[in-house]
Length: 88
Image (tube, rainbow, N blue to C red; front, side, top):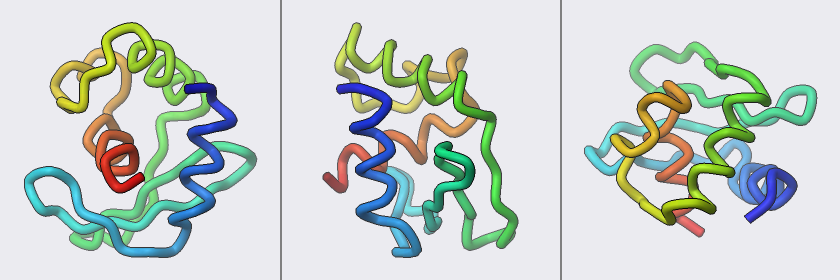
């Protein structure tokens, strides 16, 4: 997977309601070629930047895990990225 693949996935589900593994609802969006996530519980978009998203992709390519905890040191949005991959 490349960063561009991740962006294409985010674009595919942009504006749609998705769920994390524990069932928390969120929406995905893209701003300045970087995914951001809006949890239904807060309604506030959040992103930790492109560098963190690229680190997530690199780590995913390395270990191939779909467990958010495996990415906890990489990005605070791991559960959202994993949910996006699972939905694909």
